[in-house]
Structure formats: structure tokens, C-alpha cells
Length: 294
Length: 82
Image (tube, rainbow over all chains, first blue to last red; front, side, top):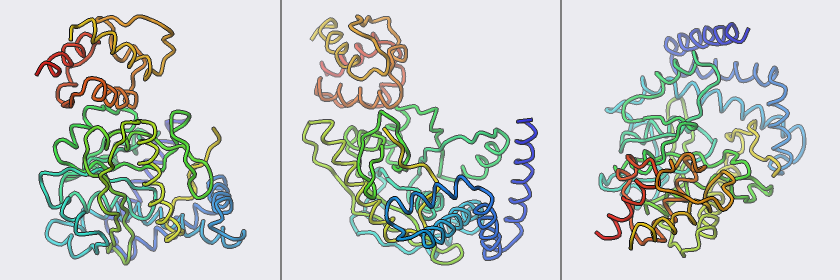
């Protein structure tokens, strides 16, 4: 039964990919909106999580505005998936710079342009995170950490589509620590999503007024390698046109108190993420279970 | 610093970062690091603590062949005396 479901999902994905490959971006994005609206109607539990998160964080003042933002959030996620699948066709070496607008300091651009410096890019489930990695890979190779899908057929298909050029993926559950540190020593960009639940091993920090568990890895990697760290994210401004918004590079002056240093770095990144989510509440993935009890 | 001194310091660091309940278990050179409850995140904690404790900078390439505590001791010894 499970195998049959996986095969049906795989076939559905093949059809979707065919449509995305044939249609121009504007039409693909309209299809994404349609799919997202359908998902919003059918995926009751995800819809409930999104609405509940929006109300609990006071991002939405009342239930109608929470439902409106939740629906837009579903659309943003679907559009991000389509943009990611299209990105290798529309964002190429010769034109990528025309497709991106930068809102980043000269110091950060200097790090990106310097082949002798790596960068830890902390980001969140906001906007077009997959496209951000693709675009940045034209500056220097990007290593992204990804969670494997439950369906092995769709996993293989999507992995083939996503991993391209100078953007390589490392499975989350097959983390080789030395490989991550090596990527930074090789002056690559290591992209890490910081807003994933880290269970009891994480550091508890208030995110939008509610306690959330943060993984320590991003802070430890910065302390160990002293590689510059920044918070950045990418927002779509038009079909296959994007704005990359990033903080200045952070070089945290360690005090030697590991727990305090890790917490301070995570708090700094958390503050950037909060500001970004408050600026673009419709572009955050509200349907994931970010806030879980201890 | 001899191997025994390094092992004694390592034992404290491993016990602090292990995800398994090792109690007051002795750590020997033959122990595999992954059998001591050191997973990928705990490894980052371990590397940080080793750098602080021994005042060394660890090259990730050096870590790739490290499987046992004995391998780690050899690597630290070469770094400390370098």
C-alpha cells in the first residue's frame, strides 16, 4: 500500500515537472497558486498549524487575517518549489546578475567575491530559500543541508533536479561533521536553516514571543572555524526576479564561555529572522511545527 | 604531554558531550568514537572543547581518518607538539 502511494506521488510529481518544464514561468507560478489553494483546502492539519502559529505569535490580529496570511504562505511555498524547479533554466551564468537585486552591505559582497573567504549563511523558511542557494552558487560553491523525503522515488527525482552546478546537498541525517567544516575551509558557502526544531538538545530562545528550540551547529561552526556568518534570505519580486536581503557579516568575539557564546550567536540570528518574518509575514512557512513544548 | 594525560582530558570531554549515559566509564584507546555517543552535533561540541582544552586548531582533514580514541590521541599529540 505504501509503495503504491509512493508510486502515485512519483507519477504526480512527473506530471507537475512536465508542466513546469513546458510552461513559461508566469503560467507555472499561476499553476503553483492553484495547487497551493487546493492544498490549503485539503491539508486540514497543516492549515490549522499555520493559522494557530499566526495567532499565537500575534502576527495576525484575528482569525480572518490569520487565514488570509496562511493561504498566502501556502502560495509562497508552492511558488518557491516551482521557482526552484525552473531556476536552472532561467538563472544561468550569463544572466543571473540581471535577475537579482542586492540589499546587502559592501562588506558582505566583498566576502562573497573573495575566493579566499568562506561564509556561513543562516536562513529560515522564508521566501525563496532554494533559489537563494542557486543564485549564491554563482559567487562561490554552496553546500546546503537537506532533509531526505519519505518517498524514495520522489527523493531521487528531486535530488537530480536540485543538485546542480556549484550547489551541492548534504543529507541532514547523514551529516559528516568533518565534511561541513571542510566545506568552510574550502571557502565555500554553507547554507543552514536555523528555524528547525532541535528537540531537547537545542538552545531555547524566544522566537516571536514563544520559546523555540534552536540547533547549536551554526554557532559552533562559526566559533570553531571563525568563518564569517550572516543571516540572509531571498524574496521573489516578479516571475524569476529576486531580491537577496542579508545582514552584515558577523564575526562574533568569543568570550570562551561556550554556552553563553552559542546562545548569543543564536539570539543574534534569531533577531534577524524575527525582523524578516515581521517584514514579510506572508512569505514565512507558518505550516511547520516550529514551536514545540520542551 | 604524554598519551595518558591526553586520554584523561579526553575522557572528561567525551563524557561531557556524549549522548549516551556512559556513567563513570573508563575511555580506552580502542574505543570507537561513535560507540561513545558522539554523533555529528556532539562532534562539533567535541572539536570546540578540544581546541579550547589543548589550544590547537584542528584541521578537518585530520579528522577524517579518526575512528578511535587512540587515533584522536595521536592526532592531538602531533598538534600539541607541532
